[in-house]
Length: 68
Image (cartoon, rainbow, N blue to C red; front, side):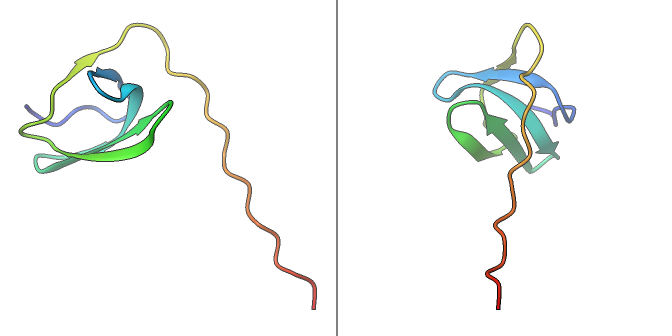
């Protein structure tokens, strides 16, 4: 399989729906709705394009440093 475009909405048989974060000829990073970030070997991963729009993601909040 060739690298996927960043931001593509995909469907994986085990993890469900996710968004491609980064993809090159060796590795692909996908952020799944229910399972979080997963990393795959691009040449052997099995995914298909999903229909619809990926859900909007909230940015993680930073933990505040304790006051001195």
